[in-house]
Image 1: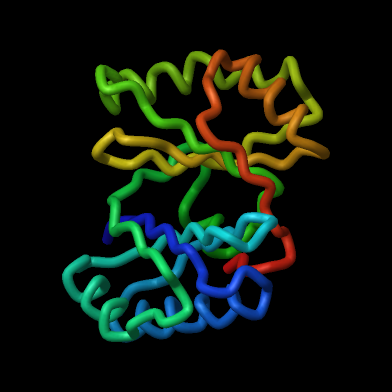
Image 2: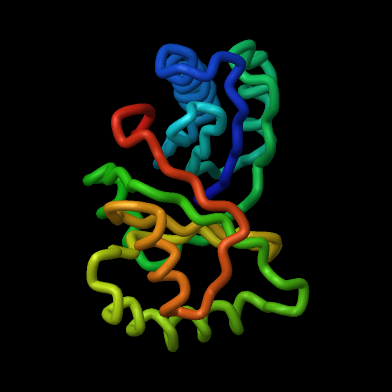
Length: 182
């Protein structure tokens, strides 16, 4: 089974609107014999990131389309992703939340092998900023971007953590730690 990232723009940007969208996503995933591994919602409830595990994206995409997702104005995906920095079985069991999400639009010349080598070499530098905890990354297999999840007290600390590993931030989202985590 593979992991797939979907990004949703909820019609309603409040917790109830996001909750309704998550119900639709989870139901469609179940019908497609897929599993919702993780969902994270931005603090403004204006974007929902969902990672699903599935054998067949055709069935998953069809089920999501059949659900019509009336509670979303935009759906991006499926984009196959690779989990880096965390164990999938532990992630499924713990369903940990994160405080911040960093999106990095990867340079066109960066290969997956180079990305992984870079990450391995630079990860120890997070120790220079102990007030930030790197949790996990999802790297799109097409190398368009990656999503990195962190726990920190504020955005400035996340920025210092990214600077320590010499990695840019294209978009930084505070996450609603009480909404949508699965």
